[in-house]
Image 1: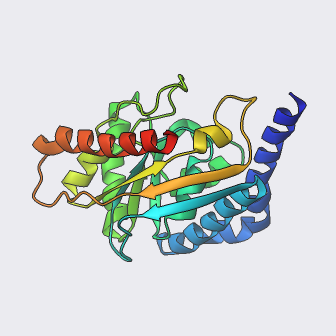
Image 2 (image 1 turned 90 degrees about the vertical axis):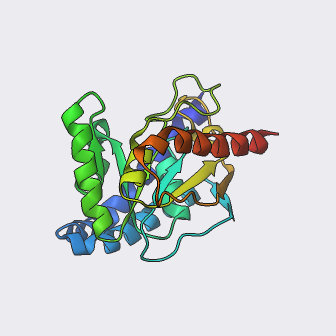
Length: 241
């Protein structure tokens, strides 16, 4: 029990430490929209520092890479507190997260999260509509958008991949941008939301072939959502085989 307690405390210290060290530069980078690429570069340093300090190392299999200066809708399974860090570590092209408004309350992290991510309150229809407007602004600047389409981490950790919500696929179709499915194979094992669990080790990642949305309409949303779900689900099963 003591090991797991220290393990979690160490994780939170590692989240805060690089933010404190880089704080002045992070603040400067969010003063204008043009500074986001610098913020993103520092966020990737933050993410890799946390993964390394926790004893995590990752192996990425890329079927189709992301082209520079092109916008994408990036989606992945959501099982761990490390999903954000691993996504930042493996995707080099600047993107913004669409995430839960509740994370704003996290000390220090929430300060930058609020100012750089697209926040959604899933219980507020107006908030969900505002996401589309914010995404339009970011995509027009050549950024990509990242959404975990399960909408949160399933409470039941035996669930391999929960049902996907529509938002990511609606956005991708409306903006006619490719969808990039990514499978995280080991994050739940490494650091799940179960407090007394986790261990250092390998985190496997697969970046799948992109799904084009050009010429697609919202009538195709359900079929595309199910196709992406199957791609990630089958890979997660293969990881565990």
